[in-house]
Length: 390
Image (cartoon, rainbow, N blue to C red):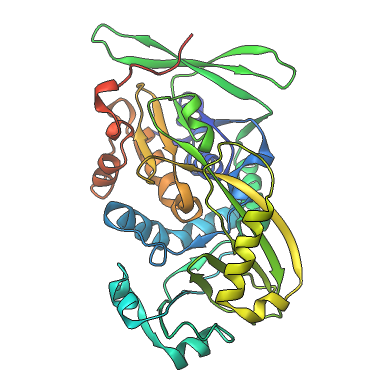
């Protein structure tokens, strides 16, 4: 199928315009799809709150999730190149590596991904992270890890890349329901959505294909997929340039240094629903962890403080691939790893849609991931029973 023919015939709605929605929309539009993106509130996108770590080896991942993250990490340079080519804007990709410090050799040996890292003794640790607390006696360096400046650069670059590739944005639109029809075999097919505009008007929009990228709000459309908001508070400080060259992933806090010396400090993990705002307790906890990890950083001037809502499933792993309705593809539930997994999520989603009615791409590497992160792994018996409809 040519790109021209596809743009005329193959249309898709992307439900949600945060990092995942933008990444999916850009990937599809770049390969000839006609994409319409519906976004409820730009400011609520988790991508604007994310620290932007691409650090699968420091995040204590394992199994299929680690394999997915490692694949995505390898894809990031080319993915960033495509976004920057289309947008003319930088994404802030920095393959700076990550340091994980430990207070004992036993802790280091027990770390799940220790074999992928370079051991650091105390002198090495001080060389990599000047001023690190003396409580840390050794560490691991993962030079393959990196970061993206999601808050200041990546999100803006993705938005611009989408627009230049012809993605149609509909802002301040709330998707309220997915609507379907059942065929003779009992299979339910997506036929449209109902949406509510900012002035309260409810509208029907016909569609046969859609990607659900609603982040922490996904549960409202697919109740049987347990995606819940996990609130994270963060702040930033301004360090001298090159005062911190690596991401420092310590107990209680992580530090992500940008090229201009800004250091992002995060993040709390709070199960408080969509309760907004910063809290003295959360900010104090981060400040204490920063002091215990890198005492010198407490003298760096404070800059911003913010929060966001991560989309977290029951098993803290994403939901990817074909959904409970024919024509619906899932791309949600990325929890702490949205920036890290955006590249591979966009590729998997496009592969599923390109496969057409089959719903499963003929790509060997994709099959195990689509099985591991399938939507109905939580409660197979309830399949299709609680999708909201008109």
